[in-house]
Structure formats: structure tokens, C-alpha cells
Length: 205
Image 1 (cartoon, rainbow, N blue to C red):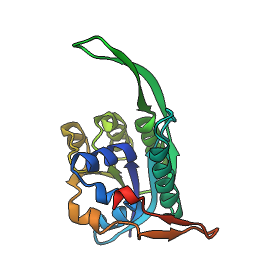
Image 2 (image 1 turned 60 degrees about the vertical axis):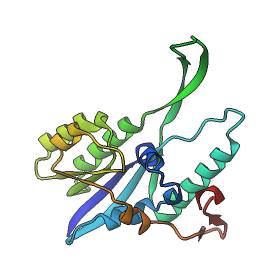
Image 3 (image 1 turned 90 degrees about the horizontal axis):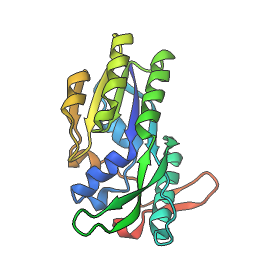
Image 4 (image 1 turned 135 degrees about the vertical axis):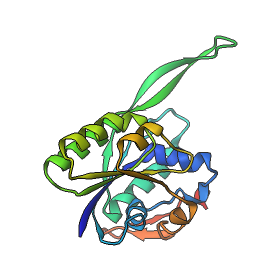
């Protein structure tokens, strides 16, 4: 069996769903999705999910609650979550010159690159399944293919997310369809090992 490890770019996937109007599909089981993308003769060895926790701005408690619930569901399913962080930056309106603080998610692409490199070095996979359309991953994927030519890297583009650079350096690519997303949802409720019940956020129904 060919060993596959999935590397999921959480924000790239989320915004692909959001831009596609797939709010009802936010309750997505990343492990189930990765499994549903496998081909015959492949087996899923691990799922790494990369994201950053939403920073408290005094107005987004519900957003934080939904994200925390979702991350707990991912961890309950066996996905290994790795976290970057948000960097505060100032944005300015070009028309009126008004300024306001904003936050930019950082470290996801670096964390994905490091994990893939480490797994390739440890011979943990035969195929890396990268769920992202972020072209910043082009160089690490290219380096993995150069140093480990027997290993394959497949890009699974989230909806509305594509990169010609990633297509160029990967062994293959596909676009995740709505059918795969619908078939990979968590049940409405999950029970954690400690007995706590996680429920799909009501705004995602």
C-alpha cells in the first residue's frame, strides 16, 4: 500500500469554501476528506491541519467559540493540529486615508513546509497530499521532489483556489468538488473521549 500523509492549509481551505458560498460545509472532517481523495492502493497515514487561533478583538467571541469547537472536532477525529499566529498590521483606505488595525495570519506555509520536509526525511510517506492553493508552498515542494525523487506530491485545490506554480512543481493536481466536501462532513454531534459533546455551530446549518 502507498502511504499518504495529508497536509491541510486550514485558512486556504476555509476561504475557498467561503468564497464558494459553502457555509453549510464548514463542518468539514479533514480526515474524512483526505480519505475520500485517496486512490485505490493508497492508505492514509496521518493528517496535519494547519491554522491559527483567532485573536480576541473584543467583538469576535462567537467566531472564537466556533473555531475552538471545530478544532476540537478535528483533534477528536485524529487530525494533528499545528498553529501559527496573527500579526497585527495597519491598513489604510486609499480614498479617504483612514487607518484601522487588522490581523494577518502567519506561519502556516512555513509550518507546512517544515512538517513535509521532516516527514520526507523520516520516510513517513510515499505521497504527500497537499490541500492548499497557496503558491508560497512552491519552493518547499520543489525541494522535496529534488531531494526525494521517489516521493510524490499531489495538490488538492480547495474550491476557488488555484495556482499555476503549484501545478508546475507537483506530480499531479486535482480540484476538490462539492460532492467530496458533502461526503466528508462530521456528524451533527461528536462525543469526545471525556464525554463532552461537540455540536455543529448553528450558523453553519
